[in-house]
Length: 274
Image (cartoon, rainbow, N blue to C red; front, side, top):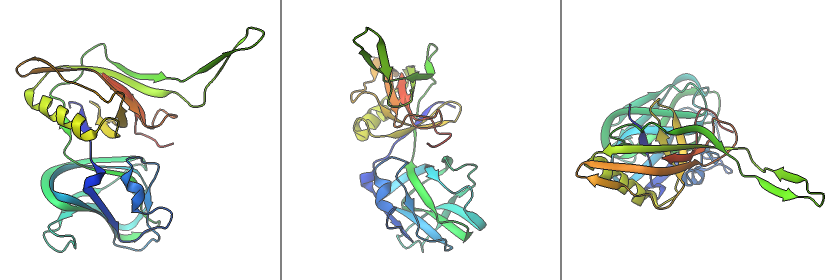
């Protein structure tokens, strides 16, 4: 597969939940960071987290980050659904039955639908109260080719403070672990991708977190390193993305948020949560 980017604009979302927790209500879902989460106040059946978009929007992908969907169900299932009305009484459609294998990140794709109302439905018996840190829904933009050789992946950047003592000894300190970085270059991209990428940079408003889906399917929560990220137009239908730099939202374990340079520099790797 070619790399993909899934971004969203939470100002277009209105979250409601069947049950809320005073300390962890749906307001925590509007900041793009998985560490802040919504959590229900109880373990009752048929709970839901609902997303009301401002208008009917094409959706074929859902990413849910920092959750407990892998262990919460005793009997029944978790479904991602859409409907024609806010009450979910008209044309309710199951888009995905969620079978999470860990509590970090769930990424699923399905046939595209264009609706305004979507939800995660916890049906059946639960052994814990539902929680979700991040939920992105939409249609990813897909690079029309993969990144070139001489790419940089899996490297870490550290922030080190250096001082020299009166004896001349160099002392260094670090207040955090390294930040995973990627540097990727894309060549000869299509005209359609050029337009999609320009729209992404414009609508993502600089350094808003988004998800980068790599060629191996591993998904990273990242931010752009720079607020300005142009497309180089070589000629008609031949466009390059050079030095696209992204970086991880968080630092620490390898499987947490990282930065990328796409060139993708500092990105968030999602295989575990700190």
